[in-house]
Image (cartoon, rainbow, N blue to C red; front, side, top):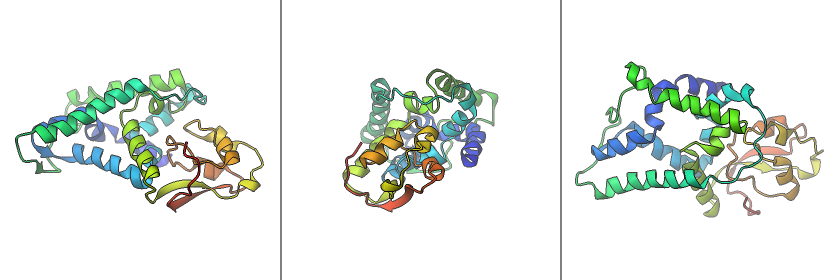
Length: 242
């Protein structure tokens, strides 16, 4: 939680690397800078660390942690937001087509400002930061904890795809393992405290893999009094994929 709050505190600086527009603008200029590198690195991280970026580093996670007092209820309706998936798919296609159809050789310049500077350099750079934070608070208020993750985040589908692909190809990765199912006493602290509103208790009893929206935060591991769950790294056992 402390790391997430620090990440949120520096969000005015890092938003230029996480926003949708800067990577496209930078690629159109023929430059691979930090905004492009950041999005690509987050995508690749899904194969190895699954959704750990969301659980440990995402400034949006820190923002929603601050917003939790507004509505800390579990989000029960977790159907996939198809409209968001379509928008993110268009964004990804635009980035890929910009590279393929571009008539210039891309230059690797991590320090190139590309689409803009840090949000703290001029007042106008706060303009994208303020509405994003407001939207995060509104999503939590309307839907519950981590509401923006479920309903609005543009990074979520990218990580979900790489996480899902990693499971399919059985790549070694970080995951939460059900190690002592028989020791579960049905206290349901894992489910109650899950920041993504996953019914972890039901996954324990059916002995199935946790779903793709698990953000590897480890809250369920910490809260379980009987050590039923633990962090593991490797090729997850071939169980039912959720």
